[in-house]
Length: 326
Image 1 (cartoon, rainbow, N blue to C red):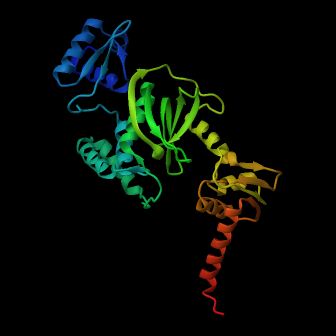
Image 2: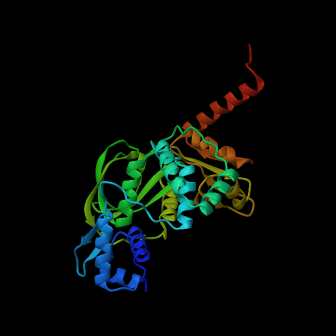
Image 3: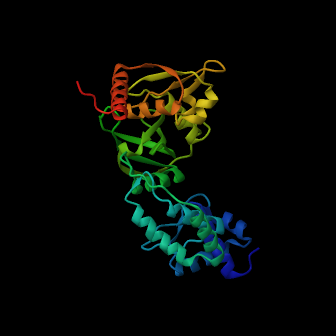
């Protein structure tokens, strides 16, 4: 039982910040106090400016709502270090967040305890980052935050989506998880109108809007069990614009360690040979994957892929041998 009131209120605030909603009974059990004490402490938090809302339902409860200003957050040591390091390395694959991350980092470092500042400083001194200018699609940070909240709260959302074919349509889904892969962000969700699981690229998703309707979470079907595994398996089998299958003269395990191709796209034929599905929506991506194989292979591919590789090969020869004159 927590008898010291300031310590108890800090513990109560920490609990409210870790979950979307708590019942009064759950909070009383966690704090080892009565429901009446919980109600008094909730009132004290409100007086300090924390927007704690009472929720309706069978037993009633409490949640920390958004307010006109964000009150201080309570972070344990590991959380503070993790957030600081994450802010230092933000924000690959996200647009419009770099300056915001620096402002947040300055505020956080200002209040870090000395013992944690030393840990963060050691990490900073031992770590360096190479920043590449990304020419690919970048996910919008505000969209990512909205979708993450919807996944957490199991709240149905709507949005407009433009698939590769280019025909935009409205979607209504139950969001399940977000997955980052190869510089892209994906939303894994259950499409209520199609009655099936779907994967959406965030750079093709616009106008996301929460509906306010929360639903029980669904269980992923095979090949689950987690969003990353499910998305990886589906991407590996999804149709691509350009087909390219390489038969490689090397063991599958060797190629898995050598290339960035998805492991599920590498299939052993025997102990010394495997196939690699290098199919992709862009020709340069296929060429890059083939280059990482670093061994002999034969290729079964679309004519467009063959033409692109021949052109690239001729350019490489010209660069090495110099221009040829008749």
